[in-house]
Structure formats: C-alpha cells, structure tokens
Image 1 (tube, rainbow, N blue to C red):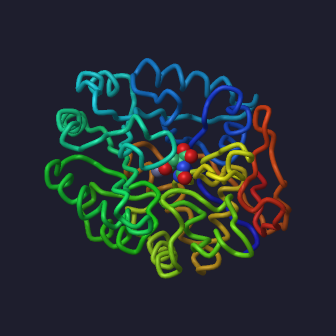
Image 2: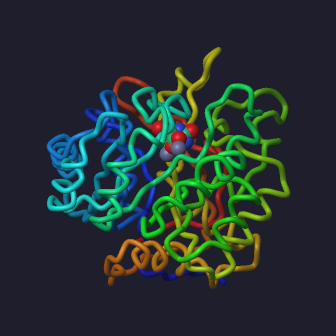
Length: 343
Ligand SMILES: NC(=O)N[C@@H](CC(=O)O)C(=O)O
Ligand SMILES: [Zn+2]
Ligand SMILES: [Zn+2]
C-alpha cells in the first residue's frame, strides 16, 4: 500500500500549552486533526468554565488562516471544584474533566489528593453524562515507577468504577498489558487512548547509547511485552481503543536537563507515526477505526466527514521547531519517516 485515505482523525488527548507556544502547537495539530480534546494542565490549571472558554478562544485565534480545527477544552479536577461548576460546564458544551492524581505528572500539583474528596463532583459528572479522563498512575513513592499504572487500576480505578457504574471513563495514554486487558474486559463505559510513541517504542529507547530525554514521558515507556499488548489492542478493531497522541511539548532546554520534563512532542507527525506503527503490525486497514471512528463514537460526537491522505514518501523530520523564544525537539528529530501526510 502506497497511499492511505482516512476519514479525518481527531486527537483525544493533546497538550497545546498557551500563549506564544500556541503558534507552534496549534498549527501542527490543525494540520493533522479535525478536533482535539485539549488537556487543562496549564499554569495555573484550567479549573473553571470561564477559563476553559477563554482558553478555547486563544486556541481558535492561533489556527493558521484557511485551516479548520475544533479544540474541545476540558476542566482540571481539584479537591475544591464545586459540583455546580460541572453543571455549568455541561451547559457550556464542555465534554470532559481530567483527573490528575496530585503529583503524578507535569503540572499536576493542584490535582486530586484523594478520590473520596471529589465524590460529589464525580456524582455530578455521572448525572450530567460528562466523561472522566484519567491519568492512571498512583503517586506513592514506594511503588516502583514502572508499576504505577497497574497498581492504579487495582487500587483506584476498580473501586471508582464500582462507585460510579454509569460514569464514562477514558484511561488516558495506557502503557501496560494490564491496562489493555482491563479495558478490554470492562463494559463499554470504559475506553482508553494509546499514544503513537507507546506503540513504537519500549523503554530501551530511553537508554540506547546514553540517556535520551526526548523519549521520557509519563507514564514512562515500558518493556517490550507491554508495547506488544498495546499494538494488539490498538489494531484489534476493538472500539474501546482510540487515538490520543499525548503530544506534550516542552522547550528543549527543559528536557535536556538534570531533571528533565516528562513529555514527547509528536503533533508534527502524529498520523505518520501511527501509520508506521500500524504498518509494522500489518494492520493499516485498522487505522481508520482507531484514528477516526472509535473516539467520536465514544464521545457521542459525529464522525468527521472530510478526509486526509498519506503517501509512502520518505521525509526527514526537522531537528527542531521554534517554540516561543526556545526550541522544541520533536520525536524522531532528524530521522526519516516513511509515511507523509500530504493533504
Ligand atoms: N505525558 C507526559 O509525559 N507529560 C504531559 C502530562 C501527562 O499527560 O501526563 C505534559 O503535560 O507534559
Ligand atoms: Zn498524563
Ligand atoms: Zn497528556
């Protein structure tokens, strides 16, 4: 196969950041996707409807002329969010709220310290039909970093789903066989997004020939058996799995640092990277459902009606993109990719 036509895909987990950075991130995302669920972990986080709608306007203002892109803002759950804000959010067309366990990842300090504290908010979300997006890792420093997702499922997600059986939940950026299996066997109120980088790489990528900060993200890349389980899930045709890049830009100097930031930037070549992963699994014919159908179906939104085209056409990923005053090093910088998004 040398060409690929897909119903225009959407990104169900994307970080665009704010301010001057939107010039870079929004242009890339709009080239690739029709819509995106935009993560609220700004500084300060997006915790009110007013902030979410203002953020949406700033994103819309950064869309390059002639391009169409619909940002879908989300709310950041804290211990203090009032259930009334959920009702307001629903009325304003906000579809989802994000649960960051406090301290689990980038800009999660204001996140939730205990699920008990947000039961009234989860109650309201369930009643309003709002979707709960979860960064599924425990934060207990005693738990091995590589086990934090699997332990989260046992300690937090299973009780959460028992307490809120009608709540629709997306386990974001799953990275383990345990998560893929858990989502597969759960009812259809639970779904998961999978990133391109977790389909393409195992944890060796972080350490090959020296420490490689641009492969460091959270949840961290896992061993090969987990990568294989993710590829199986993404290419299975199971509608519970869909595309979420978790493209997470950080200025290069903050990643190439003694305490480097977590996040891989993939928005510059998201579909190319997914196509490469699906092709390696001999499953290109499954890419459209994963990228373009399963997400909107889960969110109860119409599928996009226009298309995108990819061609087998080697191209070299730029070494960096400008990012405000700084540089942004994309995943696969300087490498040759075999698929190219052409329109
Ligand atoms: N994935 C990451 O490694 N980083 C994300 C946060 C997140 O999605 O957990 C970021 O905002 O930088
Ligand atoms: Zn996360
Ligand atoms: Zn993310």
